[in-house]
Picture 1 (cartoon, rainbow, N blue to C red):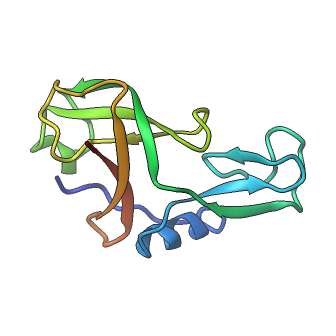
Picture 2 (picture 1 turned 90 degrees about the vertical axis):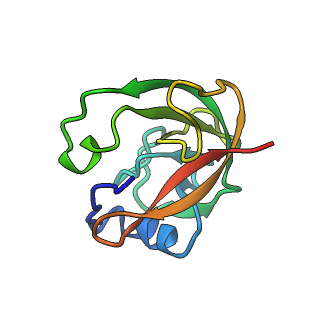
Picture 3 (picture 1 turned 30 degrees about the horizontal axis):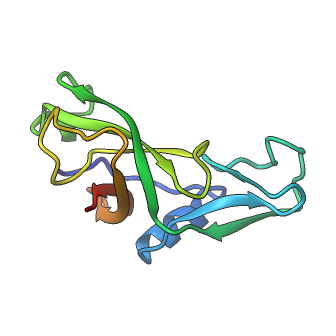
Length: 136
């Protein structure tokens, strides 16, 4: 599945650079020890702007829920319809949720609650994005 290209901005560049290196990082506030995603210019809990860092994650999580996309408005994804769109909760913080097409999982056969691990796939412009695959 060819994915739409991502163009990092100043705020998200560290996340996308890490993805290109095969690493998953999430913004972390060292003032209140809170992970947040998507990244923001200030901590959503304590408001700190000076205590944000990028913290490496294990790349493991669980499938929270999913849907099947039958009518996608994104031209690059239309040839691959229907496809899964799963919500993934990170093991480090179930409040951090990411989305995935679940490469290798047949349409509408998503095992909700199953363990997943991150992998990185290139988009149309070469930028890698995190995707998730079901594990053992």
